[in-house]
Amino acid sequence: MTAAAHLAVRSDGPTLEFANVGLTLGRTTILDNVSFTVQPGSVHALVGPNGGGKSSLIKTLLGQMPHQGQLSLHWPGAPGTIGYVPQALEFDRGLPMTVDDFMAAMCQRRPAFLGLSRHYAAAIGEALERVGMQDKRKRRMGALSGGERQRVLLAQGLIPAPHLLVLDEPMSALDEAGIQVFERLLGDWRLSGITVLWIEHDLEAVGRLADRVTGLNRRVLFDAKPREALTPERLLSLFSTHPRAEHAASGSLA
Image 1 (cartoon, rainbow, N blue to C red):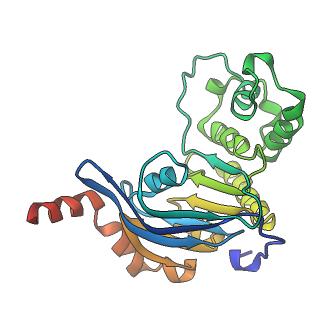
Image 2 (tube, rainbow, N blue to C red):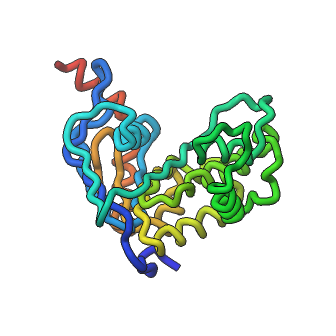
């Protein structure tokens, strides 16, 4: 079923507005007057080359990097919960940290060595069940495959239940079974009215699953529905010029 065939039951997620957002580190322009809107309750994909500013834009949204311009979240009511799933998890694989320990550390305030609190135990169990990791809760994180660790990251992004979910290449380490889990979750989020901003390099998946696509290579090169956005001409324009090389060339002429 195509993304257009899905209808959100409600839209509890916010509208995101990026208006002339800029980011400069030293003499390097990372983001240049980035403007686009993410509709509430939609799955909005962000695509572009490595170094094109996708992850930096996410960090500005999460308040981790300074920026120029305006970045606004318009909630339908009181501000809700923002969930974030990073691209990868960096940790010492020799640590005796189980899946339950990791979930406790990420999802509750009490120290992880005290175990799961009753308040979060049911939610953590449900989240791990949704990603197919319920039977591996006592496994060490370092003993999991890359795809299994990515599923655990997806699970932690579900607690507490988000209204805005930011995903940084969540499919990058998933095997075929994990991809099926992710696609099912994406459909659930849409039906729940959650706003999803999704960085992804798998253009075939974006074409099938996203409601709208923004192409970012330091600046916005297109913002349209997948059928209109993912044309050979637009993708060639998006990926043919490296943003850092372009910046260096423009700087050498100044």
